[in-house]
Amino acid sequence: MQRKIVLCVLCGVLALAGLVSAETLEEILAKNLEVRGGEDAILAVESARMTGTMRMGGSAAGALEAPFTIEFKRPDMVRLEFTMQGMTGVQAYDGEIGWSIMPFLGKTEPEEMAEDQLKEIKDQSDLDGVLVNYEEKGHTVELLGTEEVDGTPAHKLRITKANGDVVDLFLDQEYYIEFKADTTREVQGSEVEISTVFGDYKEVDGLLFAHSMEVSYAGNPAGQVITINTIELNVEITTIASRCRNRRRLKKRPASSFRPRELAADNGGSDNKRRRPAGAGRQGGSAHGTSWNPFASRTSGSFEFLAQRRRDIDHDRLGDLRRSSRQGHRPGRDERPYRCD
Image (cartoon, rainbow, N blue to C red):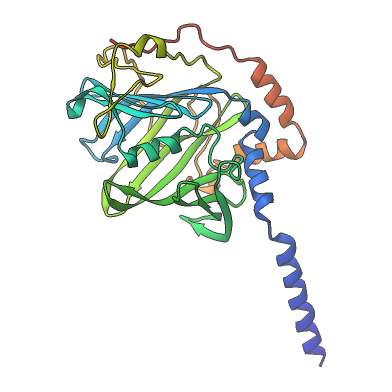
C-alpha cells in the first residue's frame, strides 16, 4: 500500500513538472522576437541592403561563386543583383510585378517571371520574417512539440503560408532562434524537398541576423551556400520608375507589356568589388560583432553570445541597446542608383 502511494506521488510530481515546463506557442514566439531584437525594432526597419557571396554546387571544387547584393524596401519590394561569368543577373519584385534579367541564359531584356519564380520572390520580399505578424499575413503556425535536430534540442513549428506552402521551422530550445527550415516547393512542375540551415548569427544595429545559409535539395548532393558579408539597415533605396518607363518594356508570358517600377540592367559587372567570404558558419571576425553558429560544439563557447543576450533581456537592458543602435546609424551618401542603360 505504501509503495503504491509513493508511486502515485511520484507520477503526480512528474506530471506537474511537465505542465510547468511546457511552453505555449505564444511564449515561444515572444521569446523568438525578443532574442532577435524585439518586435518594435524589427518593424522600425524600413529598408535593408545585404552583400555577400553565393556558392552554387556546394563546397565541392569547381563550384560557381557569385557575389550578390540584395535590397529590401517596404512595402514588399526586393531586388537581387548577382554577378557570374562576367555578367550580372537581376531579379526584382515591386509589390505587383516580378521580373528578371538573365544574360547567362541569353535574356538580356527584362522579362516577367514564371509563376513559380514569382511565388518564391514574393516570399523573399518579407523584410520582417515569416513569424512577425504572421496572422496578418494570412499564415498559420502550429507547435508540433520538441525534437532533436543534428544534436540540438529544438521546438518544431509548422507554418502554413497564405500561398499554401508548408514549412517546418526549428527553433533552438534554449535560445529560441531559428536554425533550420524544411519545406517542399514546386519547381518547374516537380515537387522538390528543400532544407535550409541558418548559422553564424551576428548582431547588426541591435538586431540578430543569420550570416550563413546552407541550402540542400533532396536527391541532389550539390546545394547552395550563402554567406552574408555586410548588412545595412534603413539605407536609401533609389527607385527609377520615371527614368525607365519609356526606355524598356517588360516581356510578359503570354506576350504583353508592363512597366516595372524598378528596372535595372547594369550588366557590366566590372565595378562589383566584393570580398571573398570566409567559410560558412565561421565564428567571429566580423565588423558586426560576435557571431553564433548553432552547429558548433556546445563546449566551445559558441553559445556564450546568446546566453549573454538572454541575460540582458532578463535584466531589461535590451531597450538601451536598441536606442543606442538606432541613434548611431546614418544612411550612406554614396548609394549607386539603378541604371536603365
